[in-house]
Amino acid sequence: MAENRGLGSPVQDDAAGATDAADQIGATRDGDARERSGRLKAAAVRQAEVAAQRRKRQLWIGAGVFVLIAALVTVGILVQHKRAVADAALGTGPFVAPAGAVGPGSLAIAFGGDSNPFSPSSNPLVAPARVTLTVYEDFRCPYCQLAESMFESTYKSYALAGKIQVQYHLVDLIDRNLGGTGSLRAGNAGACAQDAGPGKFAALHDLLYANQPDENDDAYGSDAALISLAKQVPGLDSPTFEDCVNRDVHGSWVKRNYASLSTVLNGSVATPYYAINGKQYKLTGQPAAVQQAAFRAALDAAVAAAR
Image 1 (cartoon, rainbow, N blue to C red):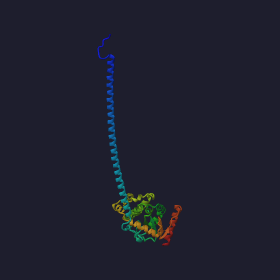
Image 2: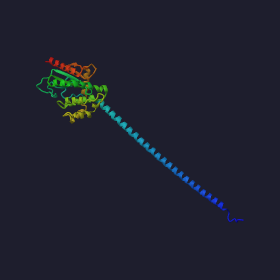
Image 3: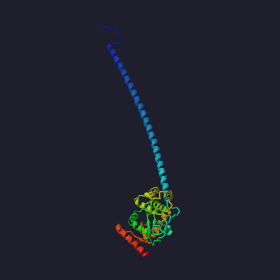
Image 4: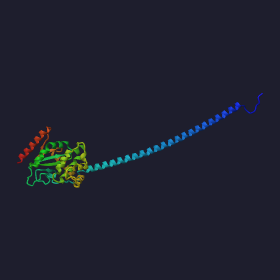
């Protein structure tokens, strides 16, 4: 008979050891699981905190952007209001005619044909011309530019020869029809050029037409743009001219000319308007060469009748 030397058999001891080892492994696994769970929870908490901080930053940034946009909108509104107020004030100052202005009410700028000290053809020995060509125009008006391209060289040659005197009237028709201030500001700039001395108005007159923007583009509604353009005319790159333009010195004169044309046309204002010795000369839809010949013939007839 085999002798029983212990409380359990080797098989039982091995089984118990295996159970203990399994328990230890299970405990270890449980600990690892709890540790992983804790890490995951901590990571989740950190992610939640990071997300919360991100949302907070986004809210602050959003609020800051909103405040900035609101401030910019407010500034824009104030600037627009200030510009609107300034634009509304244009032409409301005291009436100031440009230097050497002629005609009823001093509403015209003369070119040639007499001894006007502000005329390029000034000559005390030349008697005043007996024929007057009246021109009402708007520097924003494309038809005025077209008419000048056809007729200007003719009437200027007659004026410089002493045959006629040209009397320019500047109006703000396009501003009234399409909005903006380019007609009024450009007209004022033209009058300021007249103040600067002989030949300055004629030079700026041609320059404004040569650079005329589309009538829907109020580019001449900027005094800075007009002053910059006028620097191409010798003698207009001066503080005196700039001050005259910026202060709208002759704005009311331009508006008075509009009222004058309205009276002439019985309230139906249109530009360009030409008149030879007070009789309207109407443009036609004929080719330029035909209209130029007809215009020259009309001037010749008026000069011959005035002798």
